[in-house]
Image (tube, rainbow, N blue to C red; front, top):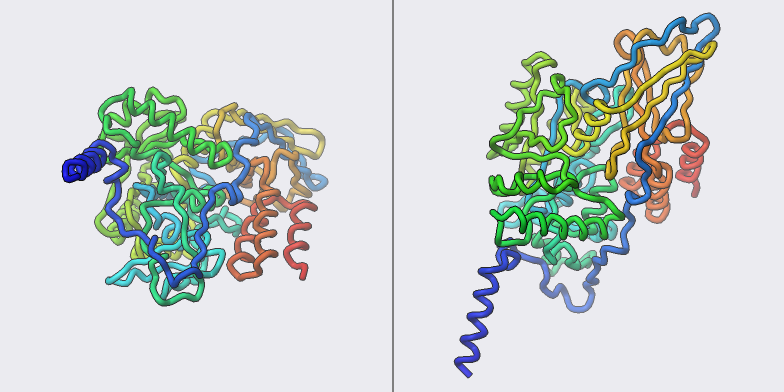
Length: 490
């Protein structure tokens, strides 16, 4: 008997040594019983809405028509350009959160989107999942920042901050259940840190425009390119199956391991990468290539207050030489929420409003489209017709651009209309002309309706705020007006 027990112990120890999934996280979990049978375990990933990424078309062709007031028509085609940063912003800030952390949802995303956040008590830090949010089951002492965080599109319309979370698709914890037990205060085990981010939370993140990235892979052969390629494929397949065809094309280098970067060059799905060393410094207003498979530099800091100094120094430089600020982080806490609030209040919507905060994937796509879009224009009596043809790139999820058109003025324009391929459209005077922001996501209306339906099912202030935000992303149309009518129905 003793020999059998010893053999079993050896097998367990050997397995945990060989397979890193046994040792990947040393975290406390909230899987204890909470008050008997009242707790309701939930968490099936298939139950949650995800934007239909697999149905998006590629190579979109959009048309915008400007009709001028009598006597203000054009005699020759104007100069049309795409600025280096969307919305004509002058500072690029990006945030990548490593290790598939649960706080990417309950702290980073929650702070940006006006949801409850934990005060990070020194004795215990709490977390929650999307199921808790839907049930209003929150950790003790959680509170709201009082607003959402972001910048504007240049014309007063809200654009919330976006960021990247890395995933761990090969680990079972992404399918973990969670306990919802609103009102139970006997203990708070359900709010203890889980081993990592869950798929249901990831769905919420990508629905809001945030990005996903490869990081650690579930192999011990981390210096073997063939093994990494095999596991890139496994992780990609798992991700695509859960997220309605959404694929990963961004790699955040794990643990300074350059073999991952070498392997990524042979995995064609990966288009953009980031690393702490040996990477390219990004100066947005000097970029003249599409940056495909380039590794861009990021920095880790000991405390988010250090980022404020980095941004302040960047702002002392001319726009043409201003470096992007790309920060890597593992765990986010209350200090990070306060930093994001500072970013909003200083350089975002409630400050100077000069910052654009996309994920690196979103920036990569914008720059790629900027370098490769085909733009043409023609004059037809009192009309200017502008056509935009996007490059035919698979697995692109941000078909959106800013166009600057010289020599025009809104006072001289009777109307601006667009083809049905354009689902989001805002515009206004800018410098010595006008600026146009266009979005060509195929299902932007259906996406906004999801948030309207969510509000109608649960009429909370937070759901109303989200519904209005997503409706306002639509161009003016009868469809948009119908959603506002639906939103206001009893």
